[in-house]
Image (cartoon, rainbow, N blue to C red; front, side, top):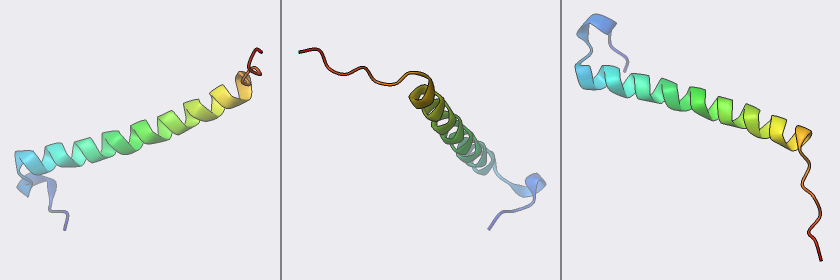
Length: 47
């Protein structure tokens, strides 16, 4: 399905870059979420 880089249209190249960026941002968000949970535990609600 993936063509050679020379033959990809502009839209195909942009779509591929967007997919790569989305994957990278998801990984980054998961890593940050894990750090937040370990570093800052939720305080119990005040009553």
